Length: 270
Image (tube, rainbow, N blue to C red; front, side, top):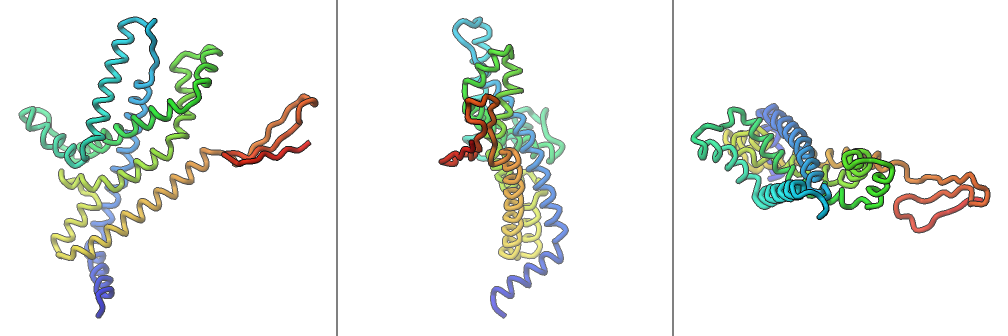
């Protein structure tokens, strides 16, 4: 019997004994990635919006002091959680917090701790993505909104953020795919994810490579499906590929069909 056939048989045996365990791990991984990405996006949007509130020298000292302080806090948060591995963040939050507080603050739920850790980590990355998405919008949009009487909150919620969301949608999807894979580090605090199922199966059978093959195929399937769904969402957000411009004035070219999104030429009809 060849090695490949032996591998297939070992994988079949593993799935027969631990298939339900693998499936529960996949479910836990997906739930954690979805919930943590959603919460991380909320944190990122809040941080990005707060980080881009404008102020001038003519504003009061209190306003300038508060906004500068907020930006400093957000910068420290972003650099801290982007500059350290999630594995160490999990250790420090889950084990270190009870240690430094003499067990005053400790997590009784591994699920709660895992969601908190992954959400905070995701929020740090999303904060910069949202800030960049907001700054990428043409300043004329803000000036136009102010010209028709909108305040800053109305401008952000009705004009800037909807456009920024479309720009950063790929990054949101990318963070979700990263979270699907990176939740595997939560095994350090005992989270029952897909990778934990692999460790349990290997501990009982010592079939490390066959189980790793199952893990590899499982994670690849999850990420490919997520990429397909997210690309479909992005296409829907982009709208139609072509659009028409019509002018009522007969002295102006009546209608033109422009090719959308970077087509080199535009065709016109009289």
